[in-house]
Amino acid sequence: MVDYEFIKQMHEWGCDISGYLTSGAITQAEYDEIMGDSNGSI
Image 1 (cartoon, rainbow, N blue to C red):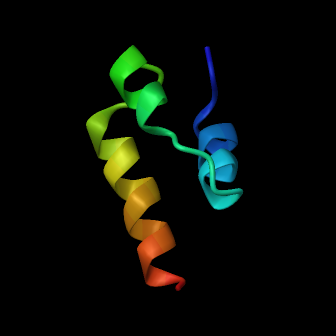
Image 2 (tube, rainbow, N blue to C red):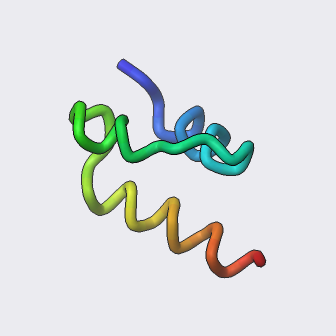
Image 3 (cartoon, one colour):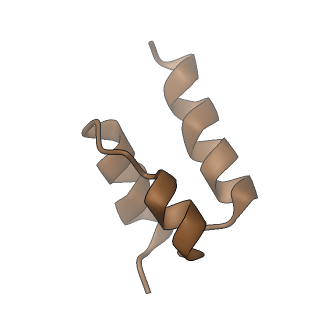
């Protein structure tokens, strides 16, 4: 299983993490949280 912090790091590196959401590696809530975190730091 892929871990949440790893996916969050991948997103920070500019990778598309939507595949992790569709594969069930992260929940919609986790995905929204990751996307929300990044949007706030721009």
